[in-house]
Amino acid sequence: MTEGWEKWITDLGAEPLGTLLHLGAGRGRLLETTCAADAERIVLVEPYQDDAAALVRRTAGDERVTVMPVAIGAKTGRANLHRFNMAALSSLRAPGALRELFPGLRETALVEVETLTAADLMKQLPAPDNRSDVLLLDTPGEEAEILKGLIAIDGLVRFRDIFLRTGRNALYEGGTGLPDLIALLRKEGFTPRRRCDTDPDFPELHFRIEPVVQNNRALCAELAETRGQLVAREARIAELETALDNALAEAKTKQTEMQDRFIALRSSEEKAKQDLSLALRLQSMRDADISALEKKYAEVLQQKESQDQLLRKLTARLSSAAKYLQQQELGEIRADDPQLEEKTAEPGEGNGRSRKAGGRK
Image 1 (spheres, one colour):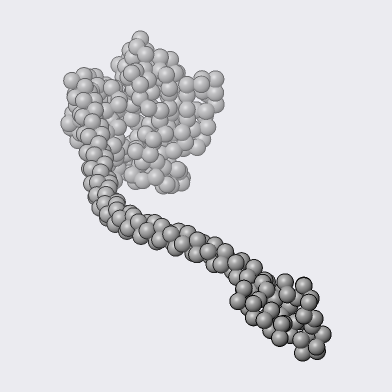
Image 2: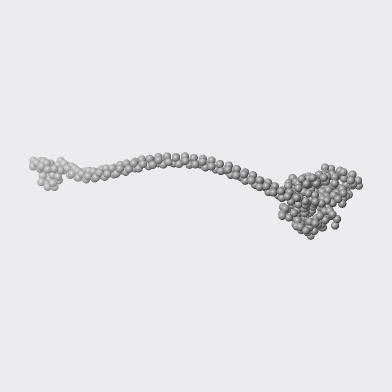
């Protein structure tokens, strides 16, 4: 097996991998090699619909493989893909120096394809685990855009190995040459380990991130997360302190209100006690007055009863006296009438003697 991507990927087959991401998978030139790797997941990204459909058919029996029919570029949406008679050179960018390198290059079609940014692509990938992830980058003209997009979201560091196939020089409009790409990857801690110039115009390279750099990135990410948690906790503490201050102020206000109410209640209690004492005194006086009135009333009733008895006696005597006077006037009174003498003698002895003396006359 000649030196190059195929051999390098095969060399990785002895160790378990996490996600193997191939951007620009084409019709599957490296499909058998990538599927032979001991990877947990294999993601093949190819924008041209016919090529993507071919990848789906060829990997139908491998549950590890996911085919995404999209191009990775500067924005998410849709863009035109320049298809050339040399299909491996197709790109989202128009050719620049590429035409000088290949005078027979012809654009066979301008195809509208779906596009994703590198950040949106990473959102659709499963989270990394303790296995190493691998990136195969074969996207003519878009290499720098993709790498910068991954760097911006700190997504490049999840890949331990990066395989790059690109032009030696900038061959597309707005594209980047190999020296600048190597410098960009070195800055992120990736060191070129192997290089294959079988195609001198499109060399293949294998980069691996230094373990120290990867660990440092992991620590930096952990530190950033810890700082974020600290900031969140400080914000929460400040929020709780504000809530506590508000609660204390509210409690103080309520305490003042309760004290005022207590004072008012004490005042009301004292007034109520005074009113009760006055009411008790008035009740006692009223009870004494009622008792005196009841006693007075009993005395009056007794006097009335005595007077009524005396009045009944007087009425009877007056009735007898009136009858006597009436008989006297009529000349019917007999001097020896014992009843009349007895009746007329009752009021007093003096009067009896007078009546007898008169009778004798």
